[in-house]
Image 1 (cartoon, rainbow, N blue to C red):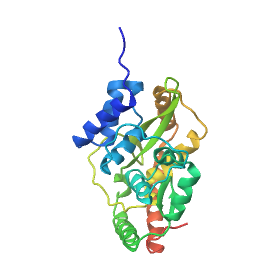
Image 2 (image 1 turned 180 degrees about the vertical axis):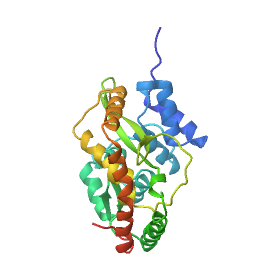
Image 3 (image 1 turned 90 degrees about the vertical axis):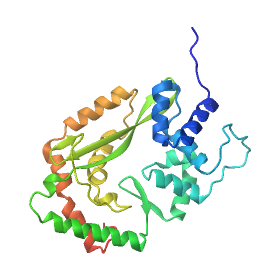
Length: 267
């Protein structure tokens, strides 16, 4: 019995169908993986096609490539960063079909720098400075109340890649994690605290948890999702309560630095 193997154009047509149904790129990618497994398009590719659809580009066939280098507009790069500011130079280059050095030069031209793994403006706009200052000033006032830090739950997401030998490419999976000062949790009834834009330096998952995880992930290659999941479970189990407590209890110090810097980035 033959097994149907979808080609790229077929899968792009399915993406267009989900785009018209107003599903997100992440939802469409999840459905493709559930249906076609290793033959599904990558998450990065799905997001790239959704970006094209939003720009009224509905041509599903590959364009003929000339010998001239690919060009892109700044707004394309800015849109990608709005969708996911944690994308690497390599990931951005693949989507825009240019090399990493080209992306790096354009990011510098746009005044973007990396902080805690996120692309943020080197010079904050006045409204962003005001939001950072106001948010941290308010949180410092609330922190003086009893048990405020004990009730904080923080979370974020990080992409974990593993090698897929069947497709000879790296396969990404999104890790979503929620934690408090006692360790990793999964769900809880909580109040959502205000968090200003472009502020990974006061987001515990960015400056503490994922930063520590990145050291363990350096130069490590996974060959299956199960292997990556096993490593993550082991990494979490290796951290005692003091590690998570430290990530939460350093927040007032960081809020103080933002207020002392009048909302600007601190060193």
